[in-house]
Image (cartoon, rainbow, N blue to C red):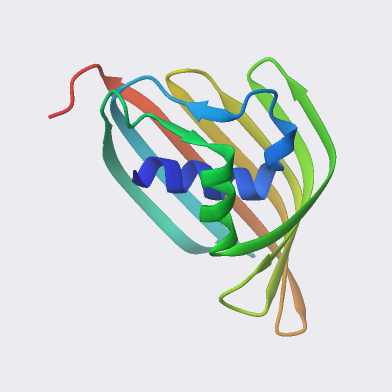
Length: 147
């Protein structure tokens, strides 16, 4: 379920739960390659690559579940949310619950049944400083079969 925590976290930075027309996010079952990169002022904060198996029956998360996952790490508000086929954009403001930091910026999620991509470009206000903050997460299906 790591992929859904990543998707939920990505959604926290990009969209509000009611912004979606449906009530759940589903990826096709299979093996996914996941890449996460976060930088602040050009300095890497997080860089992670992993594989995650999504078996049939565990490949959907409801927005209520996503909202619960998101609330563990962020308190967010959203403006200017726009939806189109396979794409959602918004202006997001998220307070990190684990530290005294606020993220503000523009986010875009692109998704299909076999992939999800989030790009967040904005600022992080922390310790009296306002630093550039960039986040990208990708989940791409690599195989129908989990190994």
